[in-house]
Image (cartoon, rainbow, N blue to C red; front, side):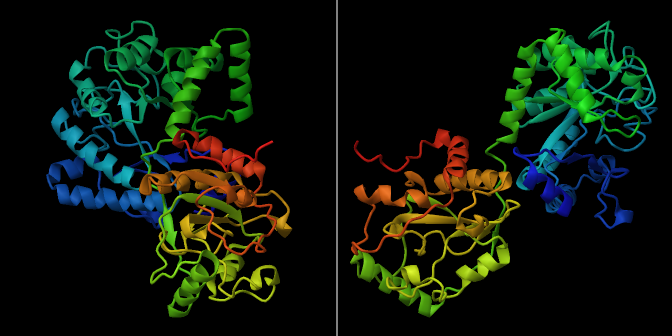
Amino acid sequence: RTLTTELQAISPNPLLIALDQEGGRVARMKPEDGFIATPSAAYLAAATDDTLAKRAYARMAKELHDHGITCNFAPVVDLARNPKNKVIVGLERAYAQDPDTVVHYATILMEAQQQQGIISVLKHFPGHGSSLGDSHAGFVDVTQTWSPIELEPYRRLIHQNNVAMIMTAHVYNAHLDAAYPATLSHKINTGLLRHTLHYRGVIISDDLQMHAISKQYDLNTTLTLAINAGVDMLLFGNQLAHNSIAQLVETIAALVRTQAIPITRIQESYRRINALLQRSDIPLSIIDRPIDFGTKRLAMTRQYIQQHYDRNVSTITIEPKIIVLHWTAVMDENDAFKRLQGETLFRDRSDIADAGQLNVSAHFMVARDGTIYRLMPETWMARHVIGLNYSSIGIENVGGEDNIKEDLTPAQVRANIALVRYLKQKYPGIKYLIGHHEYRAMESTPLWLETDQSYRTRKKDPGETFMSQVRRGVRDLMLQQPPRKAE
């Protein structure tokens, strides 16, 4: 978990951290290393017990999520059509030989993973369950054994609009393409999968270092054929061989420069991958970490509302209209939490002490690794921004060293984007997204309620760069910025 968290924190874009965790013998997180044992696909299907399957897959998906895995190369939707097949049927990786059973149990796994925010990958297109050979070891020809019924799981799941990623198989089928194996075939990936089956998601190759590919084609040819075939993501496991990322990127760039690969193909794949990474149906992970909010703080909050907004209220309930982003100016998340936890102001807050002893607070705090903490109910008033507390949700981001440095992380940008989307969906009445440093521009709006004309402070957080990055990520929400002052 530490590794995956640190990787996400330093990446400017969300990372797909992926593995093969099918259950049974194909499990990269192994029981002997302390991870949960999950039954094989064949075992679960033979048990004909949906409760067992749902429980097993829910546990597996939660464990993947808890360790920072965001993408699982599963489920296998190959049909178990050849009992002599060692790599799929022999390892109990296929649910059954009929599409109904395969789709049923694959859907259970996909739903369990979706609930944990894990992207599922169907494999191995257009079908590996009828093969005799193992594409890890060499060339595999399914021309005489493959049947069109092996497309049926893909057809049904694509029709349900439930497929984000599909992995190709390194199998050769002369009936589908007399020249190339599936991974390198334009006829199969673009013609069959995209045009005939109407698939719009991301296509990822199986490991291109497997001998079915690497023993037949050199690297330049493999990259050219795969990308031009319509494959969006290229998988290099670096277990059977070693190709550095720098080598692969430079090779692809050179192939684009010579027009062996059209730049439009790179752009198409970029759009698909970016859409995948921004999927809005991936659930947000929020950890509840409540600050002290007892009788005393409730009373002090009501008193603050009376004093500053001239409203005599019996509750501190608000109707959110604004989201305000902040930084803590404290670099340690535990220290930042302590600053918000207490009911009364710290002694070093003399700049706002005359306006009341109610401590500052916020509804959320985002750690530097992007972890989101909910500190208090979103519809309770927090003291975090002058004039606007009665209609705003505050999000504190750990950082802003010395209250000057614009040092918030890429992980915090992504977390704020996701959190703003979550809040806008939950509270459609939210109209504004502002930075704390922009709060005074809101004085001309009806949402400004401050009655004390002398109560103003200058703010720098969270900075223009951070705000522009978050705003770019949620521009489709059409949230307003503070009004510009007349020239």
